[in-house]
Image 1 (tube, rainbow, N blue to C red):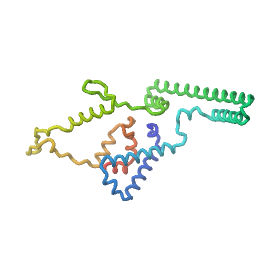
Image 2: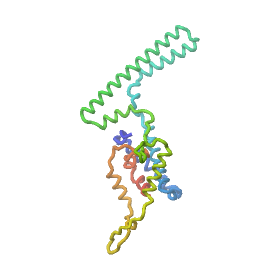
Image 3: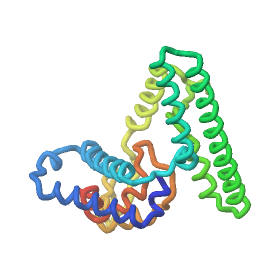
Image 4: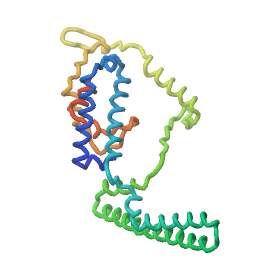
Length: 251
């Protein structure tokens, strides 16, 4: 995903798509959005960001995966020949001659695929070693991450008062409930602070209202190339989304 942010064309297309989608929303009767609470608003924005990102990824031709690198025309041809030999063997009533031809084609196909994969793997390892040698850590890990496939479970670890790991879902929920009860149900502060000639409680301190420039400045000051949060949104997806996205987030 982070590789896309280094592609100027991808960033421009993403900015245009996001801008168009939020512009359409502005032109529609958006009363429902304005009546939503902050969580519902963020869910709507998050959905648009994720859908736009996914559309561009799917649209991108020749998205490079490890298989794309080694599965060439020779591999495709060998696999097609194997499939034809198998179909011929089945159609001819599984005769010995066709069976031998099928096994031969299958052996050849597996050999070609295995060699191509082995050669590609060798090249990738050499590339990783070269990046490590020249301290190009980011590129090295991006290459390594291409091999990570499938679902990777995120472990939520929490300990109870006895410092033992809580595994049961109900036990975890009870620990969090107790934690937030203690955090939120506290007495009001008794210490007073001065504001001009007036003494007021800390809970009465006025907080200046945020303006859109504050939001933009805060986002600009955040560092890119970081792992996405639990919502799956990379900072770059907000940074490159343009003013339409930032204005909607501010609203």
